[in-house]
Length: 181
Image 1: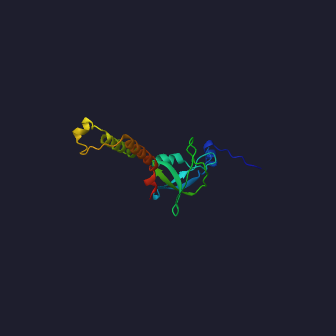
Image 2: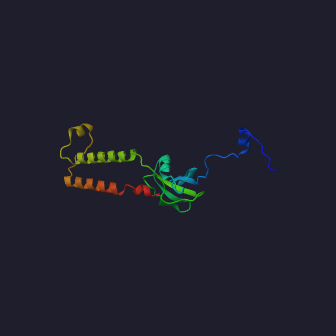
Image 3: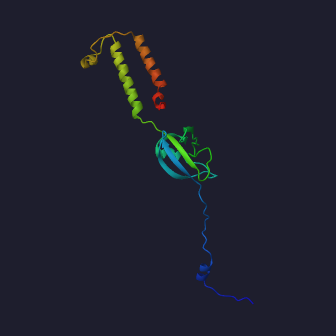
């Protein structure tokens, strides 16, 4: 014969195993080491992978956090590799990553606004100086500054050639010194 035991609500709660109403799953993570122009690492952190399959790196967040304009795969022995491409809509990497991977990233910092503004101002000053030298009659404000001690008469076509060469060299050598390590 089976015995029936009466219990209260409190006792039932104690006998029932503790269960949460949500299911906990492990979020896939990768370790990211960040380099800046091949030097560093400047930072190392764990990042959770996102996307539908939980295998995409949050590239846009890394770009914003470190002020990079682009990031590249990095190998300590061989240096910078291919750029890490990402979807511009959601900011996640196009290529998938495995949980627990070590990712080395090399970033290219954003250009500051001071550099191009300085180049433009130096170019305008150089062109102004050339125009003053080429003009047959020196302007009144240039005479007050005593800018030139010698009055050179250079034909206008020479000035035009100098301007064209200056502009062409500026466009061609924009990244010339940056690429030379």
